[in-house]
Amino acid sequence: MPVSRETITLPIYAAQAVIFPGMRVPLAEDSTLPPVLFEAMRQDLPVAVALARRPHPEGPELPHTIATIARVVHGTLERTSSPLALIGISRVHLLSYRHGDRYLVGQARFLPDLDEPVSPLLVEEARALGSELWSVVDLGIPHPVLPRHPEAVSYWIAQHLPLGPEERQELLELRTTQARLAKEVALLRGLLDSYRSEPMNS
Image (cartoon, rainbow, N blue to C red; front, side, top):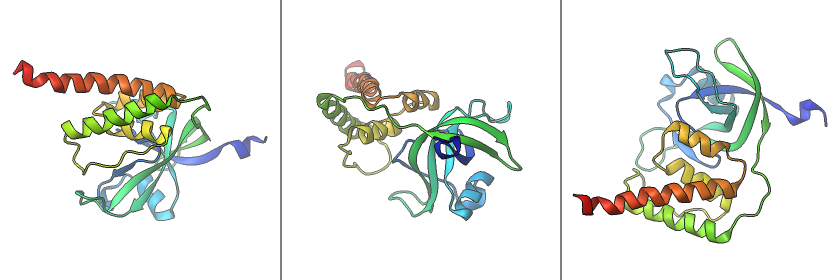
């Protein structure tokens, strides 16, 4: 198949956070949007959201090569005042990028999870632990109904676990839903164990 049909050209937003497919993240007012997001919103274009490797102002904000295509949308989430949000669409692999006039532009290829079996018991455990986490940690929005599709569950947990950007990036880069859920279950167990033990230690 010709390369032109396998790859897409996208503006790149080198961000300080990770967004996962299917997730919605509030943004600041449009007057303070980075140029790449402002143009994406103005032209109704998708943008590749990639975690920056080096934070500004130490050096250029170069992106990790595993990223998420997202769109800037209007609409207010409950308990947030921001009228704008990023909605993750699909994971991509950035094959190359260059500096444009005001932001990075790159060539990307879609990167779906590999088609491998996912344990139904693992999915149910992940959903149960995710729901339990919500009951003990204030995540700032109402208790949701967790998705049931394994890949959607894995991305929901990845977006809401209290992790640093690099840890989220590791989850984004895992190539199978099974591997992502297994790692998340281990993280959830450890996190919830620490919360359960807090009253005993006080």
